[in-house]
Structure formats: structure tokens, C-alpha cells
Length: 137
Image (cartoon, rainbow, N blue to C red; front, side, top):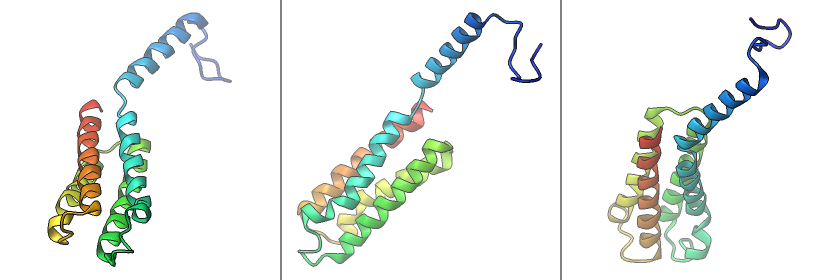
């Protein structure tokens, strides 16, 4: 039986309801992909911010700068949407963007430099964390 005011079951004692809610929250927390998605989000933020210390613009590599900026912003947006409303299709979008980071040094011909190492490391971190978040959800 529920109350018309609070729409809660008032026939079950409060300590039983609280224990059930606690157990349900614990189960959700254990299987949550949120920690992995947080790492992906932070990697995306780093990708956007790293253009200054690594010096893409100083090397006159505007194509590398814009590639990383657009991918970083896109991954950050997709990751925030995935945190709010998990969808398997968005996992593939994130994996595809991380894959682009791994291929961008070859396609845009960076040579072996700071931007290459940055893209490879960030791409691998994003790809691994995306896979782990997909397997935990």
C-alpha cells in the first residue's frame, strides 16, 4: 500500500526500505562505468589543453592543432552524454575518435614528435577506458 502524498510504501518498515535502497545503490556503483568515463573525459580535456605546452602552433602545425581540438571537444561532449544517458552507439563513437587519434600521426604526417607521442598515449588511454566502460555497463 502506498501513501497518496509521498508515493512510498508505508507498510514496509523504514529500516527494510533503507537497506534495500543501500544494496541497490551498491550494486549500481559496482557496475558503473563512471570511473572509466571520467578518465576518458579528462583525457579529452588534456587533448584540447595540451596544444599550448606541446607547442603545435609554434611548429606551424595548425592541422594537428585543429584535429586534436575537434576530437577533444567531441570526445568530451560524447562522454558527458554517455554519463547522463548510456548508449552503446556512443561507445563506438568514442572508440572511433580514439582510433582517429592513433591514426592521425600517419594520416597528417606528424613525424616522430611531441604531438605524435601525445596523440598515441591519449588515444590508447581513451580506447582502453572506453573498452573497460563498455564491458562494465
